[in-house]
Image (cartoon, rainbow, N blue to C red):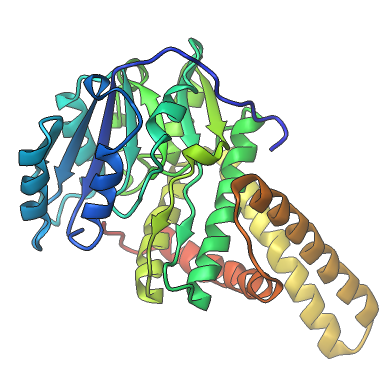
Length: 342
């Protein structure tokens, strides 16, 4: 996190904001209102929405906004459920239709702040090809499960920021990412990663890192934080995480080993404590190991929460520790060997 630099490029670019969505009638108005009111010259940006086969009221709402705002374009994909990379195909259609030098992406359940576009564009110094930002999952009703998911998104943001800041570029989120059109063309778009249902964000990021000389930047400016207002059931969370984690099959071997060792060590701390606790031996030593892990995680998350302007409590932190381990043990293997659908 210390290696991250601020964005300060004053040059303006023509921007295409792209959002792929399906059955988002509950969220789409909030997202579109945030996008049309961006503090950026209206002649320099366009909004392209891809309706990926919605069956609810989303098309009617999109038509309403398209009639009202001439800089909004709507594409209907007509995708069938059998298409494995539906989102990437939807994004491909939008990118082909777009005209911006900088392509900026978010999701329909996100509400970008008013200076989001201008601050993201300011990251694009001449040598920068891709910029990513933080996107916390915020629960508007502040449920316990929602606060756990918010903390989980903070942990993911810290990993993304840290890896990019150290020039490793392992992961990011498609809810808040931007890159140059020429970067997309240079790596032949999503062609190499079409086999993955997910990956329009992290796998694409890794391609840019490994196949180009462009610099990648992670911005921590408050104005670039894009909240995702979601109230997920556990079943919804399971489907989403299974989809996201499935991209790990396409990571390079070093990254896979790194994640494997991290989760193995995480599991080891808990198993060591449980074994020694029930065996009655070395209780103090095992407790010390677990406390060391909790303290390390606590201070790392606290540091990130200050950077990203989030808060969390000790009970939520302890619940997240167990939740984080459990869902990776359950969803991780299922995402690699089970069937994945968008």
